Image 1 (cartoon, rainbow, N blue to C red):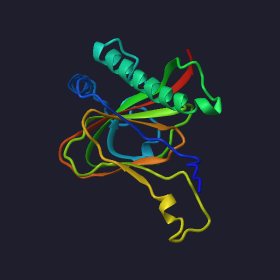
Image 2 (image 1 turned 90 degrees about the vertical axis):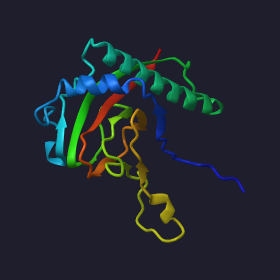
Image 3 (image 1 turned 120 degrees about the horizontal axis):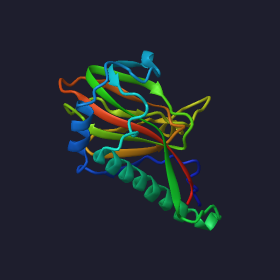
Image 4 (image 1 turned 45 degrees about the vertical axis):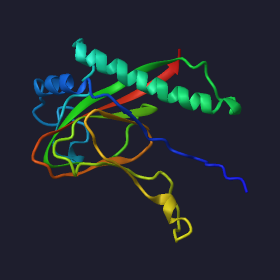
Length: 202
């Protein structure tokens, strides 16, 4: 018997706690008043959100973070590039990363970000700066596989994926994935950075 794992969707985890304190201080000193992006405000509850130009800053912590986020994506895509060499899908292993949008959330108690996905990019990133009180506010990724029928023979294929937030964790995922922030019940503020990326051969 041969089994091909077709149509797999990666969720890629990286970790960097060294940039957490600098990002948190910068964000708390530049707090938005509400959903300053004016994007999807009806699906964001008890959240403050910056405009979508968060990375348009010359501050050293922002530049350092952008380099690491970009390098993490290049490392990720290079891994898949090497994995697919036998299928002749390989590029030259060098990429240029473009940040299409970037923003941050400050979530209060009972904050929620309802189901959505991100347009005009190939990869997206979520970086947990400060998860607040642990035990809630998970990121849930919906399974992109759909079916007209499910029973005990295939129901396992349609489960969602839950990511437990950790300070300094970066999750990279393809832009087509529907996802949401589940209800956050902590008392401390929850701080998360989001961004969308494109790649071109270097």
